[in-house]
Length: 452
Image 1 (cartoon, rainbow, N blue to C red):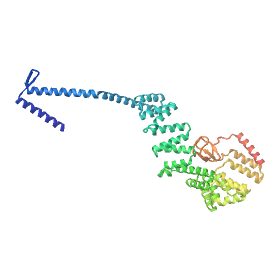
Image 2: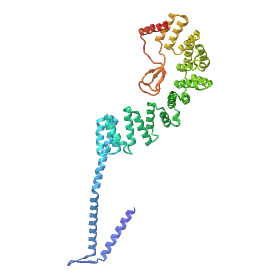
Image 3: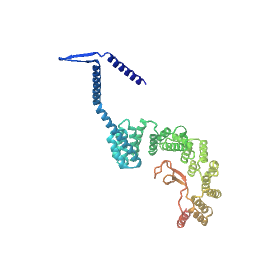
Image 4: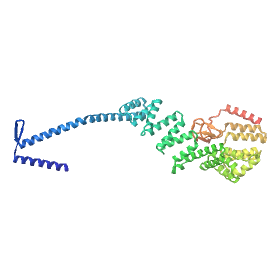
């Protein structure tokens, strides 16, 4: 609006000037070098206007000539950048599709048009990874960590390379640097935690897990379980160093976090028996058996009383352990073994039959065969029980949920696949039994009993 008003004002002024010159058409005389030029004021005004237009045109042409190369360069630069961005986009698509050849071609194209750009370095590194060119990938990642704007991305690539090359110590060093650059980044903490667990650095694992999980997340079942296992491993390490007081504290922490975690209960019972009062031990035993009855725990409770005779253990098992979970399978199995060791045949048979009713297993039938042999010297009855033991389900073991490896003792890492906290106490499926194999097992086991 303002520009329109200004235009009309100028137009009116020019019209007024033209009318005024028409009303007063004066003359102008110019003498120069012997020449005399005489004309009207209107012509002079017209010539002045033409001259002004020519000067303005020449000025604009000079400005255009001065700025032209820069503008032409800007056009070409913009075009190169556009081609570079297209190459970046196509390269990322090729990487996502797993097309190694196309990814490398687009990486070269992007480098040609966008040399030194952060995303170009990343594309080149990813293309090298896809082409399994480890040397080139490492070079590109090294170039990335030399720049402030790409160091964090470069560190992530180098961490992955270190893990691929099974160099966890280098990966930890790089992850710590990434954590310094951007503290609390989720993927960095995850890497630090996994590396700490992998290298059995339980102190670092505990610190990192606490940083990873805050608020409600810290109370999740998986997190609590991980904290329990880590506390147990820390306690075990301190116990091996002779720092039993600190080990006991961590063992109790592990047991409190997950009362069903059998190894922690066993360690806590053993350490409490050495360092605490009988009252605290009795309370711990009761709590452990109520929440995590297990044959290994029963053995740990049995051995805390050195020099105890079998009848004494049978009586103690009845009075201080079994009452806390009287109808559990492991309770009946514990009492059956204790009664058998103390040659109390009636209770031994009673508890074995109750255990078989709950979950029959080969060892239970074998114990019945032993009972028949020792109590009645009845080889025929023993043979019948051994036949059943050969066809019965296998006894439970610690079995890796990842690869199926079986262990008699719980371990934090599977020795076959390396998975952390993957063992659970369960029965393995041993498949269909062949009759000839069963008969062979029976003959062998009867021979062992007769020799015993």
